[in-house]
Image 1 (cartoon, rainbow, N blue to C red):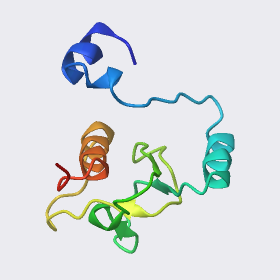
Image 2 (cartoon, rainbow, N blue to C red):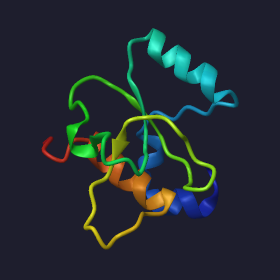
Image 3 (cartoon, rainbow, N blue to C red):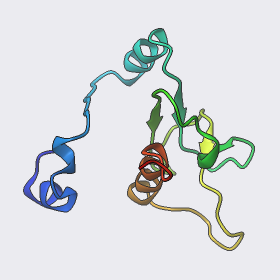
Length: 106
């Protein structure tokens, strides 16, 4: 999280965003749900909510994994053109975080 390359690439934004590291993901998800914060997993399932349908108000969590060993349940996907198979985890996380930040916010 604090490697020199990552810090440079964020242009200081890493210091303005809340960051939480967890060594026990299931327990972290339960704790977030106790706080009534929904948690979504980024999946390649068109039946799930699109990233544009995520709530704009309040908070929520998003889990991003890789295709081979990623998350198996969840509920959010990024709609893509039919010829596009998938995005890598970093690209998907970037798009989801951009949507989470509220592209229409001032």
